Amino acid sequence: MNKDLTTSNLHRRNILNNNYALEIIYNEISFPGIMFESKYRFTKKQVAEFFEIDERTVDRYIEKNKSEFEESGYEVLKFNRLKEFKVAYVNDTNVANIDESLQKAPSLGVFTFRAFLNIGMLLTESEKAKLLRAFILDIVIDAINQKLGGNTKYINQREEEFLSSAIKEHNYRQEFTNALDNYVEPNKFKYAQLTNKVYKSIFKEDAKEYRQILKLKNKESVRSTMYSEVLDLVSSYENGFSDFLKNHSEKANRKLRLSETNTLYDQFEHLTNSIYEPLREKVRGLMASRDMAFRDALHEKLKNYITHLTTEEFDKFLGEKSLDLEDRILNNIDVFKRLKDR
DNA sequence: GTCATACATCCGAATGCATG
DNA sequence: CATGCATTCGGATGTATGAC
Image: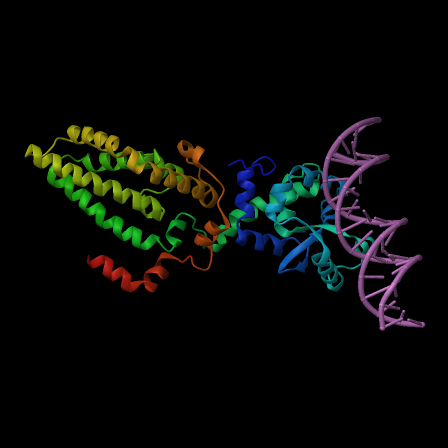
């Protein structure tokens, strides 16, 4: 996938919000900052020297992208905080020569490591920035893979909510297939057809397209790769339609043909359209955005829903609280048993 | 004399605008 | 895109003033 950091705000954010990638990048490039207020800081001068550009060039970029940089941690220090920064600067062992003019500066623009990377992603005139970008793109994919032992395919399972959603979904799925057994005439395509209809209602793709986008192998199950929010919504659709099907079959006092069932689903979808709309919108956004960031997968039909992930999202799937499914089952064995016996 | 305070001046960084 | 210039701001520095 072509990710041009200089022009894509989305891709920049997806890297800058990923603390795990930032940590690795910091450790890999030898550009130590000055520790100040528990963050590594760099003066404008240091940044300019790193990228081998004029300080004025840095100025221009700050001017143009002020809000983006400020969001990444760029700020102008004054008064007391500036005084403290100067102390930290002087005491820092990484700083070889103490700058005379800095000592007298009444205000000083300071970058965090994030803001430093941010400007590096935008600088088109620096050869070093170009190298840095290439390096970042390699590192970020590696960082996620490394964190997950090389498997982003099941990153959806690392989140706290996944397990309970998956179990609930499993139960609703059973009701759904039971309903198809009880109220629809035997037909070997019925499960697949109706399931695809549910998928298309929710995220516009059928199982086959979804598999291609996520590069799933034949044996790998589609649902095991879905995020908890998607599973919850699938549950809702399956549960809702099971009921709908039951009512119509009982009213007609017979099993329905597959074609009737398909028509019935279209009715169901039409009727529930506005009810599900908010959840569907949310789920589409989550799914498309996460798959872009984590799995490097583009859901073409959902591309208008893609946004950058927040730091919290990265934490949720990569952070302390995220776990392999196996660990999660062990940690939640009681919950697991309770849900299973329902 | 010294100490605190008020005021004036100077300087450098940031910022904005203009130019080559 | 680099450079030059003017403006603004606030810290640093210096000076004057007055109380004790």
